[in-house]
Image 1 (cartoon, one colour):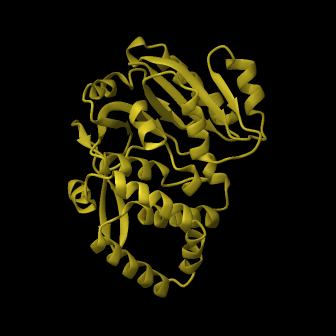
Image 2: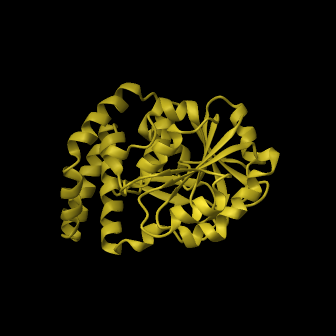
Length: 296
């Protein structure tokens, strides 16, 4: 199976200058099976595009947005241009080891495997539980065993393209510009009976220098909380968990009145969420409680 790399970038010249050569070195290792590297520039206003064209034109495929469209839209556009069987989504601030895909690729011999999370130094597999009316995310401890993972990061994960297409990719209509799109995607895969894994040997280093840090912190926080609500409204179908969620929203709003603004932001996309919810109810095969019991 061949791997297509998709890397979104926004004003990333400084980080690309440091990290892209290391990805290119890893791509030269034939055991990583990388057949192409696609960088999607999401409307940068720095010198990213000219830098890439001047230095890496013969080694990458560059797609340029004329305006900023957000992370999930950039990923989806990049994926549509790929020719590989597998998709490596990697952020510009993630540095791979030379053999980072060798172990992860083997898991795709199991047809039900949708995605494999690479091992970011300092983090184990993703866990989750439904607490206080919300999907809660936690990270397991690092170890030397392959584990099921609640979700696979859109910044350092390997995905099977055929299932990606079946799921419709990242939900850019609902969740743009960023946050929770990879959790949404992987949860939808779990609901259909597919498997997400964490591979201890697919080692990468994440420096967390992403361009999200350039946005105002309050704005980023509100978008993150809004998208958490939207993912729940779209994907949680258990009547019991929905009742807990309603109580959780009421409790959080009473304790933190400013949270009402987040709820109103989410309500502005309620129509989109409800349309997507109908599709998920129709196509889902595994219950919400069953999923959370696997990862709590």
